[in-house]
Amino acid sequence: MYSRWGKRAFDLLVASILLVLLSPLILIVGVVVRVQLGGPVIFQQLRPGERGELFTIYKFRSMNSERGEDGELLPDEMRLGWFGRFLRSTSLDELPELWNVVRGEMSLVGPRPLLPRYLERYSPEQARRMEVRPGITGWAQVNGRNAVSWDSRFKMDVWYVDHLSFRLDVKVLLMTIVRVFRREGITAEGHATVGEFRGNGEPPSKDLE
Image 1 (tube, rainbow, N blue to C red):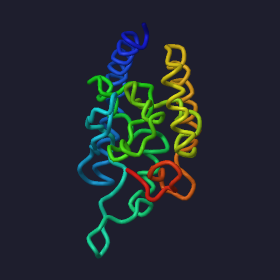
Image 2 (image 1 turned 90 degrees about the vertical axis):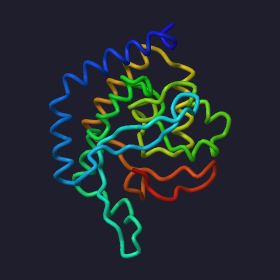
Image 3 (image 1 turned 120 degrees about the vertical axis):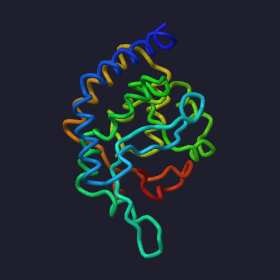
């Protein structure tokens, strides 16, 4: 009952309330992003949602657009300054995703939406993470966030799919508040954010926005 109707109603109610209550903060963060990093203020990117259907995710921009002499963007660790790190460590960059939740493309809690090119790299079991809407936060995020391996992360995503419930969602949301205040698991070892998933058994390569 909850997974079919209750979860969407809960998402819509809470996300709508948060958008109203946090609108002053969202406006302030947007202005500061514009001053610190320039435009565009909102980072937009296609991500796979439920059943792999693509949607546009909205986040506050956290990297600058500086390029090297070859015209290519500089590595993430060079474009992610103190302000970008602050946005990510406090999860303020995720606030625009509340609009994705209102639109029905995301949930408050669920597996994080990754990149479209990962779709062909998932094993059948890993692909089960897309049986539900992706979330702003999730079971993997409160159990290590970006600091855990891809294999562990996907196992936790599938575990969430199999154990989805109102009680679990509330637990994840409460744990998320604690993790954000502690700023735990923001990055993967050796990366500014999290290494790219290149398929089972392959090492990470580069960082992602």
